[in-house]
Image (cartoon, rainbow, N blue to C red; front, side, top):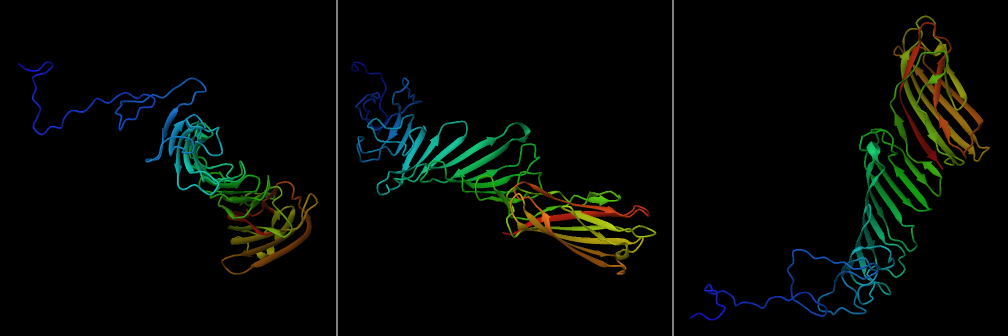
Length: 372
């Protein structure tokens, strides 16, 4: 007769002997492994809950913080800190590396919130705010962008150096940008979020609100002059408020091609910042092609609301025949330039008369900041 409880099955050859059934997870009970379909950790408001992992070969207890933790608490069950320097943030924490003298473990922490936020702490005893890596959606609708922000740790709270990499907008109307800043100290912006393909300018901000242009910018929008009234000849370049100091220089270059009046050539007047110079009819060949290269330098000689500048212009006029070529150079000093407000630098032009249909088109212009 088979033994009581025998199911009638024979053990396969060489099969390992049966093992004791694993017991449930209970306080104070240690088990070499647990197999589970899912694990639920919860508790009432204010209760310490979480999962804590301790270094092998050690026993959990005061003075032995976990090497990884998933909890909404600032401590483990034994009072060890699981978030050096900032108990307000919650998320899974991994302590890394050796402990700096007088400090605590360096760590990586995933922080719950509307954005992906990874905190990176050095463990330095004087670290006030950890570094961070954030992925976020900026804005909404078709104009929204996808940004990644990286911030360094710092000894003071909220002043770490930050670098933001921004995508082009969802509707492709604006280009991506790179932005770097240290709160209250400096900011750097590359690729101003203008239209795609314009390249953008680079700005430097040495303190709150003071932006400086430190890179050239170009524009290839055609501007045609065919009137005796002033018309736009180049792009309208903006000098930010407080950008200019003594010896700062703004330089505009432009290249234009056209045709002189068919019978009697007409003078072409070009104006910038209220100062005008004229390419005389004598420097043109009636009815023939006309090329004009322009260079304008605006140099700051005094700063402030009563600021001054010098406006220097050079116009080179030529035609394929090589005749009636000319150079016009002009210098205007003590021109008013208020450096405390934004200023526009744009060249306009007009013909003395439109008799004979003179016309000229500026095909490209550039703007750059030089000097101080």
